[in-house]
Length: 227
Image (cartoon, rainbow, N blue to C red; front, side, top):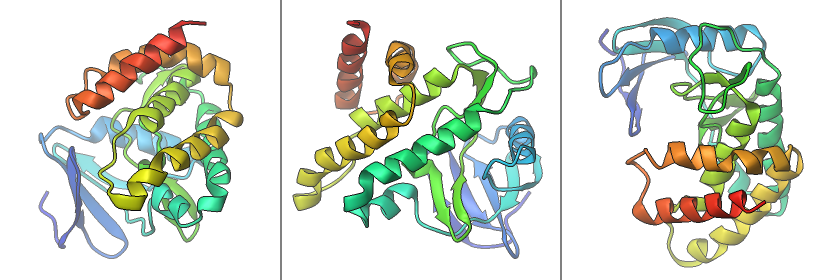
């Protein structure tokens, strides 16, 4: 399928194009079929979870609703005095998703379970629309243990190296700690800590992470294992 509008965004995995009124076309870089991902999205959407509605999918494309709004991280950084509250909002999205029983046709996550797990549910994958938060990027969604999902977000929030400079670089560690404190304070922190080694093992296979991020992940896994 060919896009009928201009390119809106480009990430490591896909390019997003405008595709008619209120819709976008996602084209994966590797040309893989997005039918399975679309099936997951339709299932999650049917359960009332805030996600873009899917209209069509096939080999190398997915058509879905367009969502306008900043990412959760951009919105949160405009309200630094409310970072813990923003962390709790992300936690609520985790809890709402993990309440959904996963169908047996979904692939299993590294930690087995019977719930839907997003496996990339962090502030950059939440768009703050006029109607509320919308969760995007369902390429890794699986059936598994909710603790793995929470641990994976914990790992990313603790170890990512954003490209910042000046005062933003100095303030980033404090902002991250406040957000993470709000996030973990609303969830089962103990279960998530026990799942950190499994989450790190998976993340270490991702070549998109920098060497220094991998080192911090290993250190976090070592800490989590010392229970």
